[in-house]
Image (cartoon, rainbow, N blue to C red; front, side, top):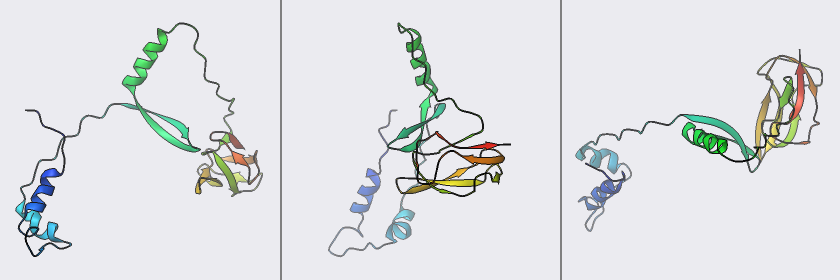
Length: 169
Protein backbone atom coordinates (compact mmCIF):
# COMPACT_ATOMS: atom_id res chain seq x y z
CA UNK A 1 0.00 0.00 0.00
CA UNK A 2 1.24 3.48 -0.85
CA UNK A 3 0.24 6.39 1.40
CA UNK A 4 0.27 10.05 0.53
CA UNK A 5 1.99 12.85 2.35
CA UNK A 6 0.95 13.10 6.00
CA UNK A 7 -1.21 16.17 6.66
CA UNK A 8 -3.47 17.54 9.39
CA UNK A 9 -6.41 17.79 6.97
CA UNK A 10 -8.37 14.87 8.53
CA UNK A 11 -8.10 16.56 11.94
CA UNK A 12 -9.32 19.88 10.54
CA UNK A 13 -12.30 18.14 8.91
CA UNK A 14 -13.16 16.46 12.22
CA UNK A 15 -13.09 19.82 14.01
CA UNK A 16 -15.27 21.73 11.54
CA UNK A 17 -17.78 18.86 11.21
CA UNK A 18 -18.15 18.35 14.99
CA UNK A 19 -21.61 19.27 16.43
CA UNK A 20 -19.99 21.76 18.85
CA UNK A 21 -18.49 23.62 15.89
CA UNK A 22 -21.57 23.52 13.65
CA UNK A 23 -24.92 25.17 14.31
CA UNK A 24 -26.31 28.44 15.53
CA UNK A 25 -24.43 28.45 18.84
CA UNK A 26 -20.69 27.88 18.76
CA UNK A 27 -19.80 25.38 21.50
CA UNK A 28 -16.01 25.51 21.34
CA UNK A 29 -13.68 27.33 23.71
CA UNK A 30 -9.94 27.67 24.34
CA UNK A 31 -9.42 24.20 25.84
CA UNK A 32 -12.17 22.45 23.83
CA UNK A 33 -9.84 20.34 21.69
CA UNK A 34 -7.89 19.02 24.69
CA UNK A 35 -10.84 18.44 27.01
CA UNK A 36 -13.67 17.34 24.72
CA UNK A 37 -12.47 16.47 21.22
CA UNK A 38 -9.28 14.47 21.91
CA UNK A 39 -11.03 11.82 24.06
CA UNK A 40 -13.35 11.13 21.10
CA UNK A 41 -10.50 10.63 18.60
CA UNK A 42 -8.74 7.37 17.82
CA UNK A 43 -4.98 7.62 18.32
CA UNK A 44 -2.90 7.14 15.19
CA UNK A 45 0.53 5.52 14.99
CA UNK A 46 3.39 7.93 14.65
CA UNK A 47 5.13 7.88 11.27
CA UNK A 48 8.55 6.28 11.29
CA UNK A 49 11.38 8.63 10.52
CA UNK A 50 13.48 7.87 7.49
CA UNK A 51 17.06 6.97 8.33
CA UNK A 52 19.17 10.10 8.34
CA UNK A 53 22.05 10.13 5.87
CA UNK A 54 25.56 10.60 7.22
CA UNK A 55 26.40 14.30 7.08
CA UNK A 56 29.71 16.09 6.93
CA UNK A 57 29.50 19.45 8.73
CA UNK A 58 31.14 22.45 7.06
CA UNK A 59 31.21 26.03 8.39
CA UNK A 60 30.36 28.70 5.81
CA UNK A 61 29.64 32.42 6.00
CA UNK A 62 26.29 33.79 4.84
CA UNK A 63 25.63 37.54 5.06
CA UNK A 64 28.36 37.98 7.65
CA UNK A 65 27.10 35.16 9.88
CA UNK A 66 28.83 31.85 10.42
CA UNK A 67 26.48 29.01 9.52
CA UNK A 68 27.06 25.27 9.77
CA UNK A 69 26.04 23.37 6.66
CA UNK A 70 25.46 19.61 6.70
CA UNK A 71 26.28 17.94 3.39
CA UNK A 72 25.48 14.25 2.74
CA UNK A 73 28.56 12.07 2.29
CA UNK A 74 26.95 10.69 -0.90
CA UNK A 75 26.91 14.17 -2.44
CA UNK A 76 30.52 14.85 -1.52
CA UNK A 77 31.55 11.45 -2.89
CA UNK A 78 29.86 12.11 -6.22
CA UNK A 79 31.45 15.57 -6.43
CA UNK A 80 34.89 14.06 -5.78
CA UNK A 81 34.27 11.45 -8.48
CA UNK A 82 33.15 14.10 -10.95
CA UNK A 83 36.15 16.27 -10.05
CA UNK A 84 38.54 13.35 -10.61
CA UNK A 85 37.20 12.98 -14.15
CA UNK A 86 37.52 16.69 -14.94
CA UNK A 87 40.26 17.84 -17.25
CA UNK A 88 42.90 20.28 -16.10
CA UNK A 89 44.26 21.12 -12.68
CA UNK A 90 42.01 21.95 -9.76
CA UNK A 91 42.91 25.08 -7.82
CA UNK A 92 43.77 24.46 -4.19
CA UNK A 93 41.90 26.42 -1.57
CA UNK A 94 43.72 29.55 -0.58
CA UNK A 95 43.61 29.06 3.19
CA UNK A 96 45.53 31.71 5.11
CA UNK A 97 48.64 30.63 6.98
CA UNK A 98 47.40 29.87 10.49
CA UNK A 99 49.59 29.52 13.55
CA UNK A 100 48.45 27.07 16.18
CA UNK A 101 48.51 29.78 18.86
CA UNK A 102 46.14 32.09 16.92
CA UNK A 103 42.79 32.98 18.47
CA UNK A 104 40.33 33.33 15.58
CA UNK A 105 37.27 35.55 15.22
CA UNK A 106 34.12 33.40 15.53
CA UNK A 107 32.08 35.76 13.30
CA UNK A 108 32.56 38.59 10.84
CA UNK A 109 31.69 41.83 12.57
CA UNK A 110 33.25 44.12 15.17
CA UNK A 111 35.48 43.35 18.14
CA UNK A 112 33.46 45.43 20.58
CA UNK A 113 35.20 44.58 23.83
CA UNK A 114 38.34 42.93 25.15
CA UNK A 115 37.58 41.15 28.42
CA UNK A 116 41.23 40.63 29.38
CA UNK A 117 44.23 42.94 29.20
CA UNK A 118 47.29 42.56 26.98
CA UNK A 119 49.68 40.05 28.53
CA UNK A 120 47.05 38.52 30.85
CA UNK A 121 47.15 34.80 31.66
CA UNK A 122 44.02 33.01 30.35
CA UNK A 123 42.80 29.46 30.79
CA UNK A 124 41.26 27.34 28.05
CA UNK A 125 37.53 28.18 27.84
CA UNK A 126 37.84 31.65 29.40
CA UNK A 127 35.83 34.40 27.71
CA UNK A 128 38.44 36.87 26.44
CA UNK A 129 36.50 39.17 24.09
CA UNK A 130 33.11 39.99 22.63
CA UNK A 131 32.42 40.27 18.89
CA UNK A 132 29.23 41.74 17.49
CA UNK A 133 27.59 40.85 14.19
CA UNK A 134 24.11 42.02 13.18
CA UNK A 135 23.31 43.20 16.75
CA UNK A 136 24.21 39.78 18.20
CA UNK A 137 27.10 39.47 20.59
CA UNK A 138 29.33 36.40 20.53
CA UNK A 139 31.86 35.65 23.24
CA UNK A 140 35.33 34.71 22.08
CA UNK A 141 36.71 31.85 24.18
CA UNK A 142 40.37 31.01 24.69
CA UNK A 143 41.16 27.73 22.96
CA UNK A 144 44.28 27.10 25.05
CA UNK A 145 45.93 28.23 28.27
CA UNK A 146 48.60 30.90 28.08
CA UNK A 147 49.41 34.59 27.78
CA UNK A 148 47.28 36.68 25.43
CA UNK A 149 48.73 39.11 22.89
CA UNK A 150 46.10 41.15 21.04
CA UNK A 151 46.41 41.60 17.27
CA UNK A 152 43.21 43.67 16.86
CA UNK A 153 42.06 46.82 18.67
CA UNK A 154 38.61 47.27 20.21
CA UNK A 155 36.18 48.64 17.63
CA UNK A 156 38.04 47.04 14.71
CA UNK A 157 36.19 45.14 12.00
CA UNK A 158 37.06 41.44 11.96
CA UNK A 159 36.49 38.67 9.45
CA UNK A 160 35.43 35.18 10.50
CA UNK A 161 38.43 32.92 11.20
CA UNK A 162 40.89 35.82 11.05
CA UNK A 163 43.43 35.93 13.91
CA UNK A 164 42.49 38.51 16.56
CA UNK A 165 45.00 37.48 19.23
CA UNK A 166 47.71 34.95 20.04
CA UNK A 167 47.72 32.78 23.15
CA UNK A 168 51.20 31.49 23.92
CA UNK A 169 52.36 29.30 26.79
